[in-house]
Image (cartoon, rainbow, N blue to C red; front, side, top):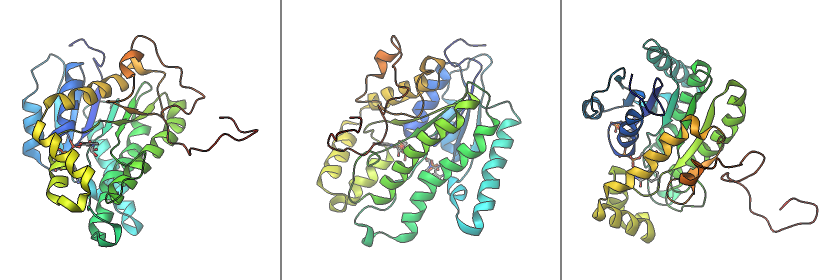
Length: 295
Ligand SMILES: NC(=O)c1ccc[n+]([C@@H]2O[C@H](COP(=O)([O-])OP(=O)(O)OC[C@H]3O[C@@H](n4cnc5c(N)ncnc54)[C@H](OP(=O)(O)O)[C@@H]3O)[C@@H](O)[C@H]2O)c1
């Protein structure tokens, strides 16, 4: 079996056909993990799998799934939960799952809420929040102690992002769920973190560029500049951070939202951060100092 920090582990990565998901797949593979690649487009998933250099004892399986189906609500939610469980059962037949990376997402409608197509708005909530939640729900009882989940966050999770309400609200909810699940899964030896990858030139940014003025000046300019630079290095830091977060090296880190771009996570490999009992790297209400309340 190949060496590496994830040797002998098995990781499911959603949205692994292109963009960040494909970069994370390649990085976890380098670290020795076997992979379960999930998205709608089988050809892209197979291209990711076929692009991996052969390594002894590792395998990459492909599951073509529309995650929107896992986000159904109301009467249909029972079927959605059962579908998520069936996927995990099917993945589990080839060996236990140690790692889940909820990376797949869609941009959703761009513009003020009242101009958004309501079906598209709820679709973004389904794919970006309800589906990852359903996958966590199905995966955690089936994971071994030492398991780890990474939920990929996005712009608007930690601050207001006008014109991207569906995407931003879904990502905020995903980060809050991460914090809650970290505590619920702690007794089972499973860690749950969120990762903010930074701006990367992908089809998601192309949608923002296409939206033009509806996206607002700053988002449009940021997207256009990143697409023009087309810097492949933009994927390296988030993929590296993901590999670190799911490894035993990050054993003291759970329930946190870590930015690949802004946070000193590279230093933590040498000196593990003392985060327990602090609000560091979490979503909190910012208030002025007040007597009797901890700062
Ligand atoms: N790009 C950025 O600047 C940026 C910034 C911050 C955060 N992020 C986050 O990074 C993650 C990856 O984004 P990306 O930029 O790499 O996007 P991307 O290139 O558009 O890739 C998205 C992936 O998700 C899959 N996906 C979308 N809808 C799906 C569905 N209904 N069922 C199954 N799979 C589905 C896509 O495959 P199919 O279409 O084949 O299904 C694709 O593999 C997302 O969580 C995103 O929110 C991106």
